[in-house]
Length: 231
Image (spheres, rainbow, N blue to C red):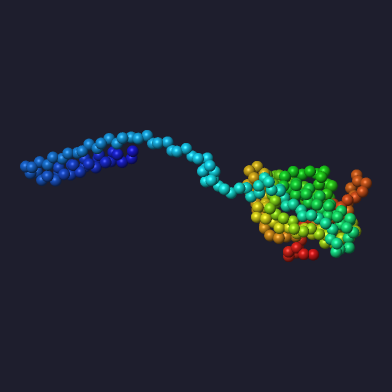
């Protein structure tokens, strides 16, 4: 143990000082140095075995921002025709359903980091298809996937309709856990900007060469230049 040797040296030094100060008289001062008792060395006792339940309590209780039981992206509300506009209900429902299919295909690609080209071509065309494909390719290169299960889509409505073309406005709120996550570790890499936003989806009646009939497909989608989510 540290300090055991220095205790003996100090006692010897004190004895020498006492002898040196006797002044040479007849009386002799006998100095005695007490031999320190050996210190019994004890084997340190084994620490008590840790209780696994206590270790779990002391561990970081913060769970992953989005759990396994939560959706990978924000689910859509029920989409129904607006009785106050001039669009026939069956046609408006057709457009809403086309938007819903496009929305699910696009965000499935973002949340899995995998592109199902066949499925995407059924719902996207032209620039919109290219934008999704490039985004997924960049996400794969960066090793991230998007998680937005805590975000919410509150409203979707047809803002403008011109025969073979329709603009749908999507009102949504981005939650605090939404962002890009490392696809291996599951850790948050980049958090998305939180708040309430609007996005416009342009759908057009597109007929591909191999199709007998055309269908409404997303040809463009972008954040709407608007404050809040109004018509």
